[in-house]
Image 1 (cartoon, rainbow, N blue to C red):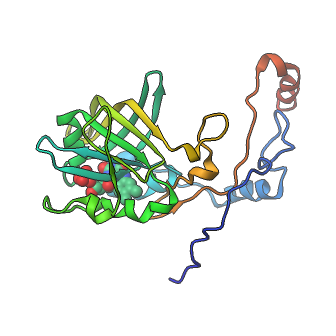
Image 2 (image 1 turned 90 degrees about the horizontal axis):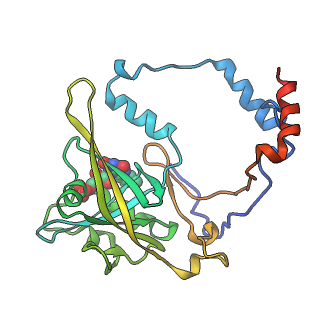
Length: 264
Ligand SMILES: Cc1cc2nc3c(=O)[nH]c(=O)nc-3n(C[C@H](O)[C@H](O)[C@H](O)COP(=O)(O)O)c2cc1C
């Protein structure tokens, strides 16, 4: 398949939200795009009883439906000092107080070195992947023999960590040094066998590159250029962005009540 080249000049920008004229209680469908979305219902639904389907069929469906996913680029180190680097998209922040993240490692068809290392040494780093080193990061999902370092295959650079032994990825503009808080087995409800390990890490140190910070001291997505995982081997970059306010019932209750009345 021939594809256009990656557009390195693309700059995500802020636009209005998808339906900027939306009022409390308005139904979906007042814009042409939303109308087309609603009309898609005429094709009906496929409902899947997960207990009746092979897990191998659920995998492609779930990873394509639960999108976009951030990717944790995890660096860990074994008790004997063997370094490991691998991407994990079953990943998210779970708390900021205490600062904590989760990563989930599948035990099938083999227990991941990352999982083994984290459980035995208790420390790891999570590095966020930006567009300029996506290929370097992707290659680390390869299962190299012990004699070959994923670091060397990737061409990425180790940077020393402060609180954990595992290095962080120097090319990453946002890295977290983590300490194992909990490792929880996710077992098959039928066999009781552990299929995944949910790792919760306490974030001990955050390293953020100054050039991706804005004047408020938070990460500017336009400068950061994070990638996201979609289904199969598809990934995404940031497209255009929009902002939406958070509403307060107390401040808006009359108008919200009007919307509710229209739907009664
Ligand atoms: C973008 C991406 C995301 C991935 N996400 C996960 C994941 O969330 N959980 C998992 O077990 N494996 C995931 N994998 C596969 C692991 O990265 C791969 O099995 C890797 O070899 C594990 O390395 P290790 O055994 O060295 O720890 C992912 C692979 C890629 C390319």
